[in-house]
Length: 212
Image (cartoon, rainbow, N blue to C red; front, side, top):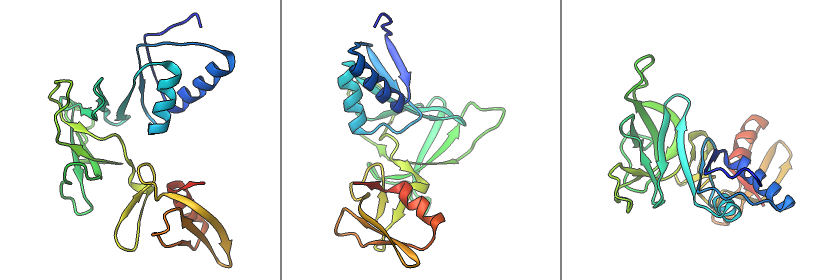
């Protein structure tokens, strides 16, 4: 390829598509780094993109309401929270701060938006704080990348939270319709079958679980 950018910043899905085109047409694009944003970057996608472009893949987390919230550095020990612009909290279902590494709802306060202040804004995303200091030497606090959306979880009967993006139990082994309801059997045999009574709820459940 004649055009060789130093940095590529785009969606993971676009990079996967570019990787397929590069493989098909025997193209080589070698940026210094790639920054992904707007979509969840899975470990599998990160490996594939990095292998195809031969460079590190760094993720960025933000929203239209608050702009950039956090981003990875070269050490990739987590995402540095943009504390100069945003105050971020990670809360459990009772509104209490979660412990280091625990998944909680992300609550954002924008510090520079004077036109429409967002104070303790429930953005609808899930993530977890990291207390460990980053090896890069920057002192901005760390968080794990986006773990999913608050609407993309299922609470089991014993109170466990299944998050599709981070939990292997969120894989469906069988899915079939019976008279008056739908039945989904997770790949994790320790989980009971999930019974869904109507199509509206079925849409949400299918959105959470992956299928073999």
